[in-house]
Image (tube, rainbow, N blue to C red; front, side, top):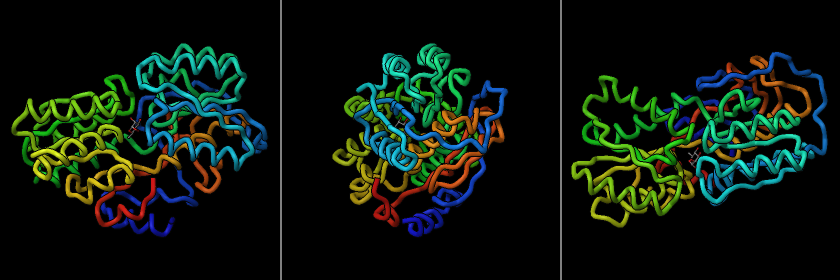
Length: 353
Ligand code: RAM
């Protein structure tokens, strides 16, 4: 798999090659963040066995998080930790609060969470941390003073830039485009959208005009309907960028059975397994993502390193993440998995997630 991943990354051409397992990577942060820990960890401290780790995704019925959960469980098995996955069925701002409280009450050692809202979860996270729980955000950050470490899937700038580039390639850098996002409060999508707007202001994208940003709330049906709404509201629409695996699959499904198939382009962040049929039927060309399983793994290793006292979340600390190699905590308590991968008809069959 690693060899094929290397090939695919090289073939993609759009991204640097560092995302494969087994390599050693350093990271530097680019999102808002800030580890509050002044104390340094003890790198020689042994990883504790029997750690209790709660895995809390934005929502449980999202295939992206199912894959991330598998990675978390895989890491848990490797380090003899008990990983318990739980979470809400919707990605609403405060839907995770009760799960955070429960993790603290159950005296879990660490919480690995993709936050639905940076601030709505913060008070519960702070209370949990004051009771000894270590908090790792992954995928979507919480307020920096409410967590120890943020494991980012890739640098926000890279994630945003690749999507604008793919759309420009799809529509000849000309025409109206829309964004179909997740929830309006999602830290990750909002960060990417801000950078996309900056990208779109560059001279090479002067022919592209962002006419609307819609929110499908990471709900399949809502995203499907919002796609229909965008197409009706903007008869000259040339493309939709959906920086969410739920949104991009719903948008592609709508387009694939509509008169717009192949005419209105779609790209964004999708899982290869959800997007395969739309690439094969010509609805979608290229799209991007990282391996959610590796993201779940890395976040869980970071949680274990924190709970074992190896790291505190301070910049420069290093920890081992099993087969993923060694990682360094960057500025603002951020650890970066690696650059995104671009998928298209030539490489999509090499991926199974
Ligand atoms: C959805 C979620 C997740 C995001 C991916 C790309 O599954 O919104 O947070 O990282 O899309």
